[in-house]
Length: 80
Image 1 (cartoon, rainbow, N blue to C red):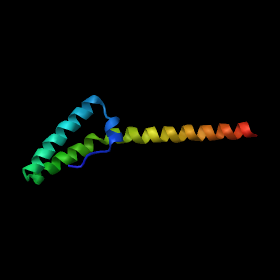
Image 2: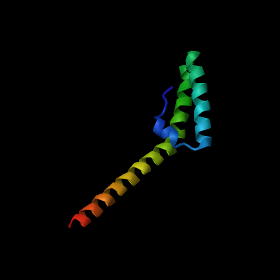
Image 3: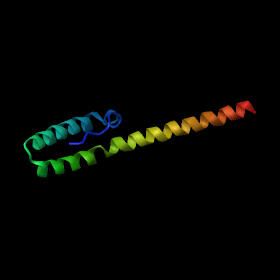
Image 4: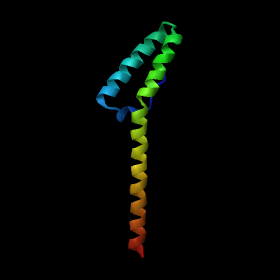
């Protein structure tokens, strides 16, 4: 089972994180039993579950970029 990044996990809601952890546990068990055929759909479910966290991370990055741009523009205005 492939884990998502710590940054994405940090942006999941409590409910999403609980579901993520449960699915990872089930998927890990299935892989340990050699049931990769069953672990695959669990991984697909994990991939869908983390999409909102990925979008939140992207938005956080865009907000940081906007704040940096505003800071640089203000700095340039002050220098003039």
